[in-house]
Structure formats: structure tokens, C-alpha cells
Length: 378
Image 1 (spheres, one colour):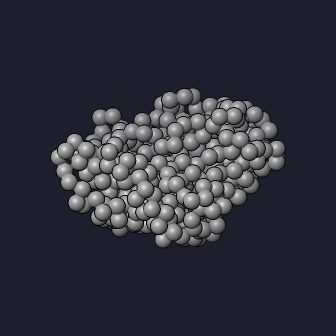
Image 2 (cartoon, one colour):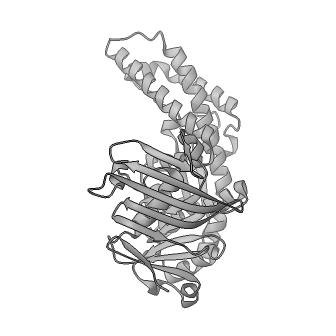
């Protein structure tokens, strides 16, 4: 997977921008608040149709403009393709693939594979279970349209079931339809539980391999799935494998907690209560790891998606690294670059080129970003 050209019109703080990147290393340098992360966000949005940061989609349109446009050419499976997106302020998004309109968003999934690291990713380690569930949902959805559909259905059913339980607790509804909502909750919930367990199992060895590379084998990372449904033997070695097994466990747990859920007026268990542990050298990183260790853990977690995607698609994704060097010591910086370069195409933002070894800069494309303008510095 390789991005060959990127063009922007009225996107974020760019009135107009165009870059023709290097097929390997691309360094975006500039002071803070000049637009470096916005360029990464454009690539990320072309891949996921989601903003990189928690903002409204309309905020991607440059202030005062009526619409934004993004266009990219990329190489996938040795064939060059093109994508275009129009974002009309307060209007509808228009998608084009190879100059043909796409009417369904599901047709976009997986076109341009991207792995992105930002400072916000620290919340995967430091934050709440919801932050880790968001990581799982985002990454698995990019790999599976079935998961994305099941996630949307599960959320819909969960909302309806909670509404029923709440209004019943308030004396305004009967529970006649509860069995049907239970059946749907189990159906879609079992898909999520199975997919999340399998994803973390696949990711685990890749995360350890990356962590070995970043720490020179000095630390061991492990991911442990904590399902929001109690299982008879709550250890990872005995968690169910198949959807039908998860469905049986989930249905039994609902029956056991039904009286309590009715009394409290809410759904107390299910994949919406899932979590997973990130452990370093056998202890939970959130509680016991240093800030530098936590940052390395998140970086290992993100970069483990590179070999995972490569194993599934026979080519690596594009890698976006936003200000990744600021909290890494020089040895870890060097090992990070050595792990990725020249294996994958990288877009990396920084404020200071002194972070790089001269031989890396000599083989990189350097783009200077200043006040919403970007130019290549050869």
C-alpha cells in the first residue's frame, strides 16, 4: 500500500495543498499549530471516513468555505487507484472511487489501509474501558464490514432494551417484548465478543514482536481480553471461541441477572462492558508502568497492526506518526525508525529535525508546513 499523491482544497487550515510523497519516509516539519497534524488527518479521513480527533465532520471544512475536497492517488496490489471526497458544509458527503460515485459507505472500507499513532492514543493505556473498547471497535471495523454492521445493530438493540427496562421501572411499560430484545442482544453481542477475542489473540504476538524491537527485548507486553459477560472459567485460556458458544454464555448470564436488571432498569452485562488489560512484564501498564513505558506500550499496540494487516492483505498499510519522537529517548527513536524504515511508507510529524539521524533524513522527503502551506524542501 502506497500513497502516491494527496491534494486538498479548503480542508482544515489549508486553502489548497498538494504533496507527492516519497514511497518510504516522509517528514512533515514545522512549529506547532501550523497544519502538520491536519495533513495526517486528511490521509486518515481518506482511509476511515472519520476525523482523526473528536470533532464534528463539518469542522473539517476550512472556516468561511462552503465545502472541502480531498483527493488522493494510491497504489494497492500493484494497481494505481484514486479516491475523492467532497464535504459540503452542513450537507451531504460525496464519495468517488476511481472516478465512480459510491452510494454506500460500506464500499469504502479497506480501500486505503492506514495505521495512525497520535498522543491521544495514550488514553488506550491510561484511560477508561470505553477508550479501549473504542480502539477495538475502530480497528476491527476497518478489517470487517460484518463487525461494523453488528456493532451498529448491537448499539441499536441495547438502546431499545435499556429504554424498555427504564420505562418499566418507572411503571410505564410491560416486559412483553423483553425476550425478543434479549435474543437480538445475544445474537449481535456474541459476534462482537467472538471478534474482539480473536482480534486480541491475533494482535498479541505482533505486539510482542514490535515491543521487542522497540525495547531491544528488555520488556514483555501482553494483551488480555476481559469480556463484559461472565464465563464459567474466567481465564483467557478457557474463553469461548465460536459465536454460538459466546451466545450460550451470554444468554445464560442474562437469565441469571434478569431480576437485577429489571429492578435497576438497565443492561448490566454485555460487550458494552468489555475491557482488555495491557500488561508489561506481567503487571498492568495503566497502574504500574512509567510514562515512557506506557507510551511505548501504545506505540507497540498501534504498530502491531502493521504486520497484522500485512498478514491479511499481503501488503503493509501506510503509517502515520504524529509527534511520536517527543517522549521517546534516542535509542527507542532509532529502533522505531529501524523497525519501520524502509519496510512501509511513513508520514511523520515533528518540530525539530535533530531527532533524526542524518542517514535517515538523507533518504526522506522533507515537507515544511507553515501557516496552512506546505512545500517540499529538497
